[in-house]
Image (tube, rainbow, N blue to C red; front, side):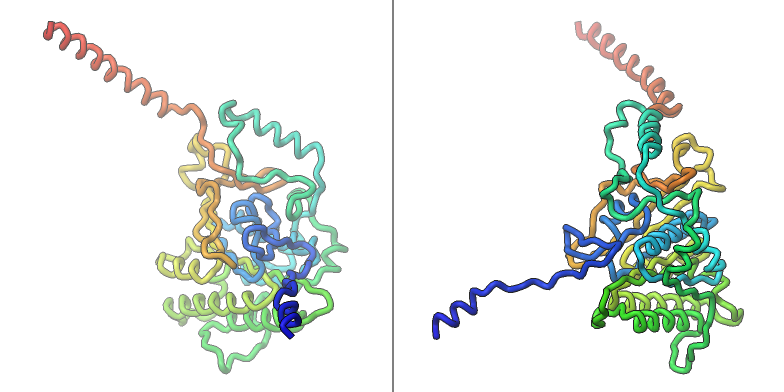
Length: 374
């Protein structure tokens, strides 16, 4: 009897394995399932990728150009990986947004040549400094995309894409929302999770991931009724973020939202929305500002600010190498790099010239005191 109990107690226990899903990988830090955003440098900055079951908030630049581009990368990566998509917007046509998705490319010599040219344009003492943007190799996570080419129409036709451009007729008798659009979108996401068996408790034959992209949420076009007060709009938006995070957390799904934060006069609501998401970043474009003509930022198109990073299966979120990040848009791709200042500026030269008289006066003062002391 004792031998039987002893054998049972020392029996090897099997660990539950994370199911393999195309287009995903398991994090080596916290064993969390990750998916790529479509931009390798973006994945590197936030800790290796977007954790499954999280909500990512992108605060738009002034004109919304670069935030919309990141959303296209996110959707293109989902189609190439075979994931299901939900595209929601009331500011632009969702079908046109999907038609403009960039096409994936393979690593070629042109990419290596462009990288080598970038190293020669900066000073030699900055060439060995580590750049945040991960080099695109054949074994890298995710895919690389060419902005000059669009996805093939046959690939888009075969993809599982659900479009949401407004209220689709879901009832709102028990809803706490003043704006019916938020409740309708939540119902659309919930029904997609149930029909596609993306829930954690579901047991499908083949597990897949649902990607949800919400463009420019909270913009004036999301509010049709003009009599709704500002307090009600903010309350609806906060409640929508809270319910959305609950839906995404209980499923094999990820969600990326873009928010025109520059349209909100009160910063308190922005901080609250950032807290209701798992990750939050902000894009500061140089277009239309004084920084556009500043020689310090001549190699970049804007700054990339990290407000919050996800802390899943860990007590501490990922700490990036540097918070001084900038982005630039090339003809074929979008890059996020560590901000490097030019080695020589007019201000530095002027400062060195200003220090010379003080140094000379100090030397003269020493000589004068030595003569008097003698």
